[in-house]
Length: 68
Image (tube, rainbow, N blue to C red; front, side, top):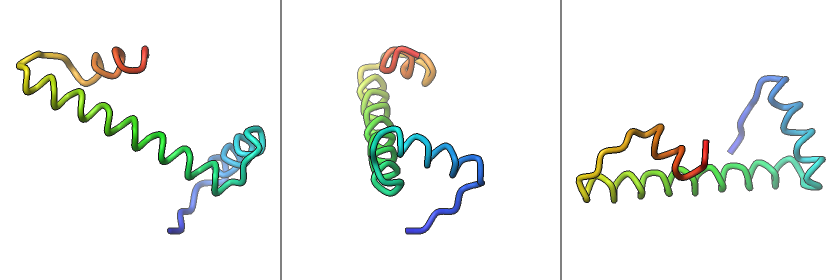
């Protein structure tokens, strides 16, 4: 897979990868994997809430899961 980022994003990725002691590729792999897990967790939580009949907005669910 080949992904092109704008220059300012490339610079951020390079800096964060270096600070983490990782190659750019390993840093991106970890970042993507973590984001996918977060999205799966949110989808599962929403699915369970819908099945139980509970009402909670997407934003409220994110706040409960991630404290944001």
